[in-house]
Image (cartoon, rainbow, N blue to C red):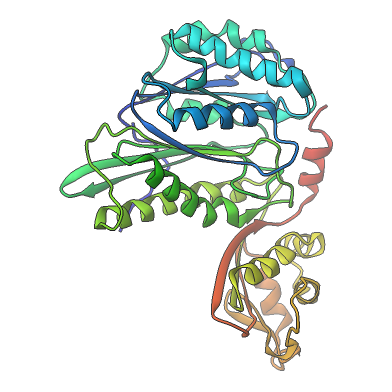
Length: 411
């Protein structure tokens, strides 16, 4: 059994530093940190997944280009991830690309490395020019303060509307040796994965080949970040990075027990980070797990799950603790499943069946249903009974505060 903790454990070959550059809301440089630098040891392998939003931010475009070069072993020195919060550098055209490149150049010059060894990431307001000079001004301080113990500080520096940092860590024993896996993430709104969502940076000291690392990451993302939604909005800046430094000397090869254990660990860690985003969703008061069972395919299960999870009527009913299960039934009905047998569908809350045979169960108890809806954590189970596939998603309710936070985001 792998134990996942919210206290970060240092990963050999990875160091972090943070600085207050004054990017968030044009705040003075003496305010909280809003820039983070991640240094990954030379000869490490790095995998990444990025947003599929057509308006991908400038740093996403540059990071994908640089990562492709790194995966061809075009660099022998350290690899860096440079992250700023408070400004997304998205919707900024050619000038945004120049800003992202300039940010990378400032890191490479500071460390006498190659520009493509730097992966840029940004999060914050869309459509505003990035004040690159503020980042370059703090580069010496970032370089001087790199530490293996700064995971927590980095998690806080990349936050925007988050109220708490998202951190996960675990230690595995593989063939009698210790392997560490640690990650951080940020995100609370504009959450609907279409590869990953928000920003996430995960590292292990295991020795993993490049193609294997990519497969491990993609498999884990599909079961975690690709299974959460707050508001149905896919960000322009989504990215998830997984690095393997090899500093432990423990190899992870396909088809071995070590491989299975590492996949389990990465899956579990990313689920912890993804669900932490839902628990901290903007204005959320409810953490909702949606299990769709008996679908004819994975896509069919997800189709139903997201129709429910992204319905404003369903989400506001959860916020009000209103057992208005008819909204759930309606969402299933409009999800687009062909030849849906409504008499076969069952809807349950925390194991209590509300609907079967096309309507409310004969012994339905409104008070019991309302008591379940009033709980802070709810499991909604949908049984389609038309196949053998099942999928799980996580979502939140929709509250007054969600509207307030997003209405005031730029003010």
